[in-house]
Amino acid sequence: MRFQAGVARLGLCPRRVQNALILAGVGALYALETQTLGLFVPCPLHLLTGLKCPACGITTAILALLHGDVNAAFAANPGLAFSLPVLGPYLCWLLWGWLRQRPARGRAVNAVGVGLIVYFAVWGVWRNLAPLMGLV
Image 1 (cartoon, rainbow, N blue to C red):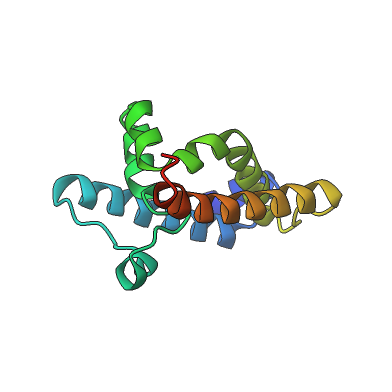
Image 2 (cartoon, rainbow, N blue to C red):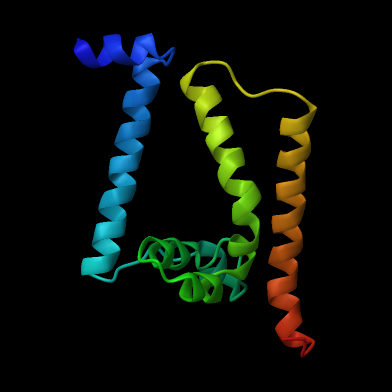
């Protein structure tokens, strides 16, 4: 009861906070499992086609960032590294709105979302074509 009352005082939905905490716990368990056993969830696109999706290497990059190794994170997925200054605050903004049951709306939210989608689409094409054209 105290948890729900405290969360409600902050203007957050207790059920959504519980769901977010469960998801964070699952993410922490996955991070622990990858560090201890070295088992990663493979990318289905890479398995089927041999092409790298925009998110290939994201687990390695995040784990490297958690260890403070920025160079390894950049090597694992440079596209993610370049997007973090925009992607991080944007996702926090969306999460905060979701927890408060007041979704983020407006032109700024849409513009940043569309910009990120375009960025990752271009990044996904570039990371597969650049080596073929000898640009990397």
